[in-house]
Image (cartoon, rainbow, N blue to C red):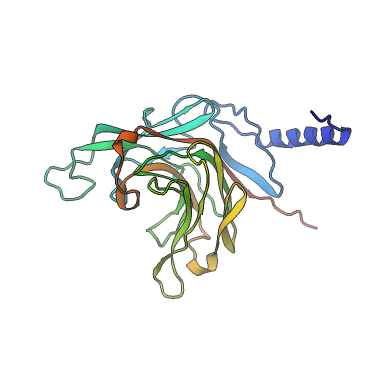
Length: 289
């Protein structure tokens, strides 16, 4: 073991002092995690999951029911079987089980309403009513589920109709492509007023066995995606009008099947999507000279 020099020791003391100044409360009123300082950025919102129980309701809400993309999971609200915090982690669990569909209507042909019972359950946590941001660095450390049919994501949505209000996919993974991580943006092009996307992807080892940090840096001019601090994608915001100059909220979800997730290997369930932390930073204001 190498011995610390005096200058190294002083630097560590300063680091810890600065980190503690960024501390914020978690779901139990006390967050024991010291968040490392990121130079030039100020921590404005986070959840370190240093508590036990359901996700902190002051930070998270839920989508409910069948929501989009003909996905087969039914999103439940505040149900520990699908979203639970323990041992410093948030776990979103997809299960194969019969679950009553609150929107069921006999004789309906609407895919959201026609089935009395869902065959799968999961959770989608959102900050829509709790917090939203224009610009910043969004950082999530996560370990992904595996198996055909799983579709975990970290993403943001603007307030308004889709895709006009914009969507930023910080991380998406579909189980039929083991190790493949996708980053994407959905928007309306200013040049012809048509829907467009810009996807860039990367293959990683051990996404289901190890944690990786998925991040987005968003400023007035561009969106930049990172995986473990390696740049993956870059998008110029002037291509999309005002969609990326207005507030977005954050979503964490584990979808099953649907238009992209595809066939579900039910024998692989339950599957767990584990999140170590979620952090939002914004640029520090430069002092006036």
